[in-house]
Image 1 (cartoon, rainbow, N blue to C red):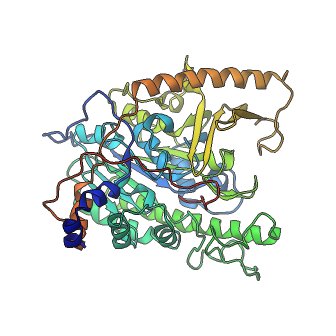
Image 2: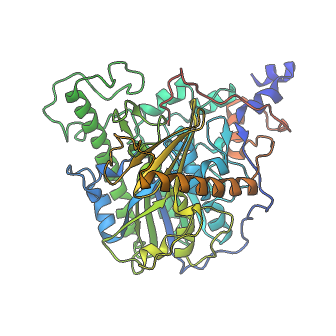
Image 3: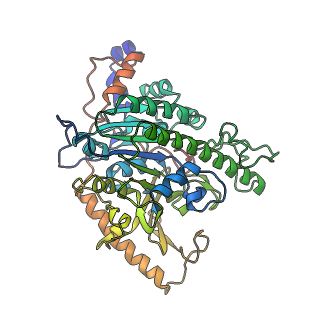
Length: 513
């Protein structure tokens, strides 16, 4: 293929298609890798992201089924945020927000034809600059380094079972949002592979403080937990629903029998319990290596999941609470009080500044998130700008939605038709009955909040303007493509790339990660 492409002059075009369009740039330079190591007394940081995990399906958040004994224990030993809100309802932009502390429309990595610009400074880059060893383990396609999420990691490990397929799809200039990769990822079982990679790395890297990011994918559909988790929460089911082919199976729909929907949720709960067991194995490994007291552990999710509460299955459709509410748990022995529950609303963009303050590092001025250490220590302060609002955005798969949420209520705006809908979350937490009385004080407050938060968003977008930038093929991905014979080691990188059309449309399946 390489010889054919060279002969036709198409190789630069193929290389240009290998990566999505770079999203934005900033004036400040990127943080450089340090030449000295961090102080060995500094704490480690373990950040676990459990894909598609709803907090209301965890025991520590009040769920009745015993889905999460190890996560519950982690919460009992640390602090739990009761109302954490994601930046969106799907994987890629949520993790870009987690890593940068920026809203989706500011970091601009909002769809699978885009990538996080190298000019953004991620949490991994900040800790790498401070001398930390940095490593990431991912297990779903939307976290592949082609999307720019590997920035700042000394090692960024693909724990999927279809790495070669991913490379072949990239080499063919196709999107990782397509059916081939998505089918492979939805059927993948990754928890054991992730754990083995984590354990091996931990045993070899204890000489200096580390930042470790662990992405656990298996809670994401398809819902196919292995025994005994497949029958753990619905052993008497005799129907035909299996949890396989969740996205495309027409039999899985809003009109299916309620008994079958309950079985789907039982399979989802089985995936949570299966993943919870592996969270426990990772924590046990810290204990075995005497790293417990010297490691800050944070567990979050990127988004939740819909089971037809508002007519949809999966995610990446709406911004209702079942998909934007996420868990956030923090354990830091000797610093944070065990069993603390924080009712205040917090956001996924607050994770980075919270980590920095816990480490005693300067708070970044180029992020939108706020440190929540004051909440953890009982000395909260009220923001004076729109940053007290949780802004979630969905600009993907034919949707253009924003939600503006506070504890009391939420306003969702459709940017395509400029219509808004509001909910009183105190009286209607399931968001079933919209507030229509224009005299309702909550509605007036939410409209004022939306204007204030929009101004806040616009101010940051001006600080991080979009700019045309060439795609950049990560060195490790290039080496893998070279080993497969798809590109040559002496082939020049393209200088420019044509902007691609957004992936997905209202008529296409859009339940992707």
